[in-house]
Amino acid sequence: MTHLALWQAILLGILQGVSELFPVSSLGQIIVAKALLHWHFNAHNKHFLSFVVALHLATALALVIYFWKQWKIVLVAYWGSLKRRRLVYDEPSKFAWLLVAGTLVVGAVGFAFKKKFTLFFDDAHYYWMVALFLIINGGVMFLGDFMKKLAVRKAEKGQQKRAEDLTFPAATLVGASQTLALFPGISRSGVAIVGGILAGLSYEEACRFAFMLATPVIGAAGLLKLPALFKPEARAILGITVPAALAAGITAYLSIKFLMIYFETRRLTPFAIYCVVIGAIAMVILLKH
Image (cartoon, rainbow, N blue to C red; front, side, top):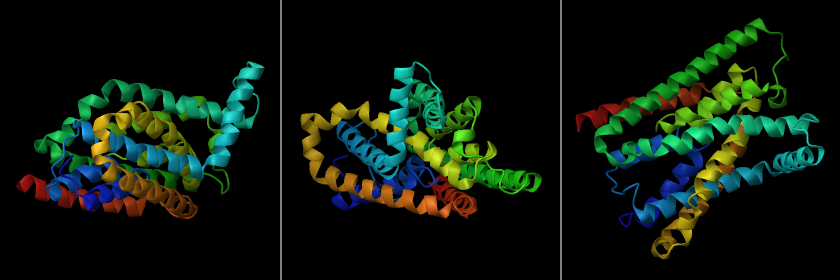
């Protein structure tokens, strides 16, 4: 970690802020960039842990700020459920608990198995597999677009669901799809959006639901390791952590804003093409080394 220059740290912050939300896999992009640019940092380094915590918290904060009006409704709904002793008593309360249903599986699986996937960060022999997962990620998005086209042909125009219309099993499955993002190269937002559109949501609604689901997952990943930010050794990298976190937060907010407008009328295909092309190029280069 100490080998990172300020410009490299800021670039990693931008990569985190953009690729965590764009359906292109933040871990995949960072690992491929690390391999192709020959950057040397250890995922288990105590300094790197503090750095990553800051980037994740900045990204989660951007999500909270953008969707703050909706999160206020959700939080009020949780309080209402406690007061009434009923989980679902109106549409906002249903949506609030759909988010819980969609988060439980990915939270449990991520907590149990995340450490087993860190070898992709630290062992150069596995970098080509990250490129392969990027290609697979593109294939999943191509499949999602294809299945959506078939569904639209069979259904009458205007019959697409809102996220609030999902059943609890459907929300759980959409949320559970995020566990695939444990494989660096598979995008959390990408698989969640595909899961949402396969459940009958429009692209815009699937994107909104995916981002709402991602907020507690990304936030929890940072909060669980929040003490690392306050350890004495974290001060040594404060000069690069703060600007990198600002870069992550700003680019994350702009990414959310762009994607919510983009998915009003567009599909996943451009992101799928990007993942396949970048993944294929990276895999060829990495296998040669």
